[in-house]
Image 1: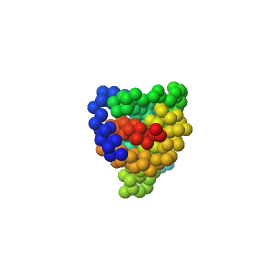
Image 2: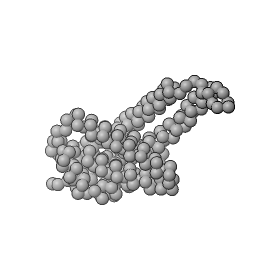
Image 3: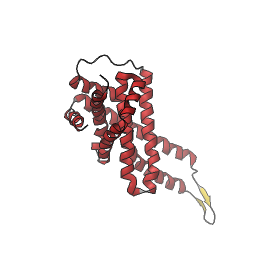
Image 4: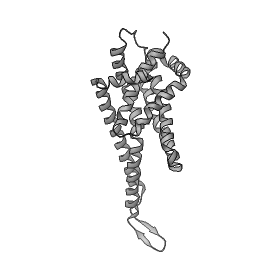
Length: 228
């Protein structure tokens, strides 16, 4: 695993990696901005301009107050979800990173397994939805038990990155069933590898590079673990 981390790091300057990073960050920012805009627009429709309160009368600042509170909540959620969303978005560009690794380190490979475009898109959407949903669920733990937040974040995202990235890489050559079977056989190894990558996710800027590194690492892992 450490050797594969080193090999992946050695290729981080590859222009194809940089292109995927830029695409993933732009898509992530656009997605978060869209969610923010929809949330604020919905609040504008739902909240009345004035509210009548007992003993106070009619007040007109409640909608503004709630809107500003919502801005704070959305900004906080954007910071928390930026990395998980970026990790999910990278799934859409995974093939480009894996292909770059294989072109450099594993020449003369047989043709890829014929996955339909619809299945590739569905798998990427499923991964992104899973990453977002699990991290939103973990927010409850962050609020209830803040000291446990870093541990939960690393373990949860380590599991997701390890299992999902490996399966998405393996699917290109083994198909869905073969990829899932191989991932089950190496469950703990993949979780450990994912955890090693999830730990730096708390470091600003570096956390946006980690998903690219993860795909590269698990491409190496696949070729190390796949049946010959």
